[in-house]
Image 1: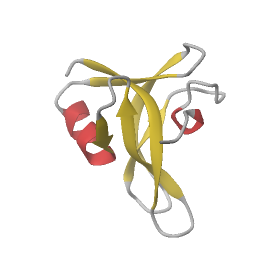
Image 2: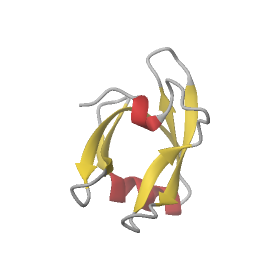
Image 3: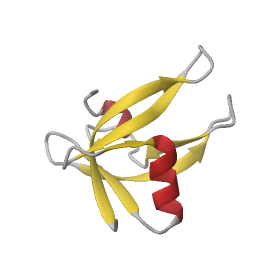
Image 4: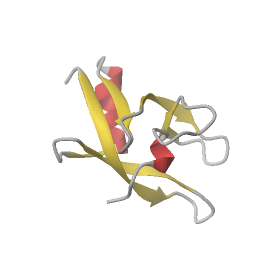
Length: 90
């Protein structure tokens, strides 16, 4: 997998106080866990989001300061339609 486009997301509640993206659905319908995406990224694959309006953003791993879990986030600043947290849920 070289570059994959994330079209939708499913949230995972971490501590009851907050959540992170736990699963993603790619354009082809494939569903991957956050852990699998991070594994593919470590092996050199790139993930991008694509909003319904066509905007894209790069997905990167980040460390949560609250729960210390590594999670997925986009580089969109300020948040736009291509932000991972703005994608439709599945």
